[in-house]
Length: 427
Image 1 (cartoon, rainbow, N blue to C red):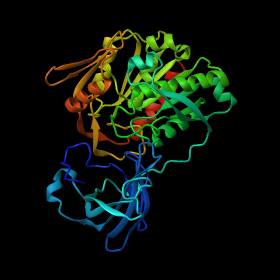
Image 2: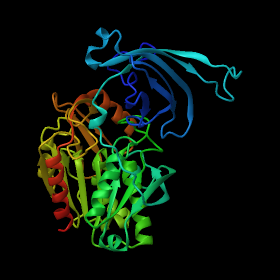
Image 3: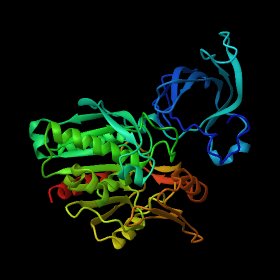
Image 4: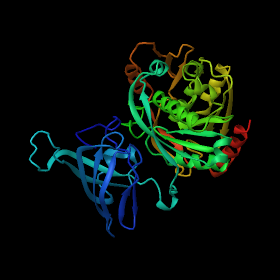
């Protein structure tokens, strides 16, 4: 925690995950994905020293912020931070590396931040499933950054490049494609895991790496479901020209990615972008559903929502509300477990993950305008065409943001989900 930031504000916690194995501290660039380790060591007495630096959103550029932390696991003043349930913490400081062209560019390191750093134990390394290397044909595409629904409809927004990775032989590409959108962070372990599962069903998979070049923080307007939907459009255009699109064209994503997948099936966009009309299936894993879906969905598209019964971040009844509000072909399926019930990379427990939809009901109106209603008070904020999406998002963050998410892998539920999806894609 740096510069006196208060607990509960958006800036104190970095959210990166560190692993300690055989006396070495490593980082998988989980959380915000903006920490890069230079070294980290722990001795037999639990004393450690670690050095890392932060990079800009997307991991592209050095920010001029380096950190050197030292301390001892399991010790420290924890009374002030009871809500963190600390298993280990440490004092530290930050120093700034001079940046070429900056002020006082004399090559000297400078102290910049007085910090208190924390290591919070979240599980045993033996419980963590390591992701396998995901191989495929990598292609760079041009996409855009639409800031809202109307930018997306008019194909507005700054251009940028994103990477996709296609995995599938001739037989699989003929059977169909499943496009997999990122969730709310650049960590793509789940998405690559999904891709292998769809490959095993006989389909070609296409993983879109659109989070990394945009990500700054969770729920930031720098990385939204509109942008993810635009990436899907770019990928579909490429697949149509390279392979042709057949009977099975599915778009899937988890959490924020599931909402982006749903957007690609909305009829106004399908009329603008012809390849969206070829989407046969929308798969919403850990589905982030609007309570009300007034905008029409393409008649040829089937939608399935998949949620954990105990998921307090994305309660499954919200997706039931969406089904009731819409004339679309929507199937709701609920499984035992919480958030990420399908992912072997999440251990069971309660994380400090942030969420919105449990506290606010979202409506997507027929004209693509959106509104949010605070569930506890009924207060409504509507985003009209031409108004600031940034101000709308700020209102949602201020009024809807909650934390504390029941999550973790449920093997039986996960196996059933993949069996259900194989049946769903065959329909």
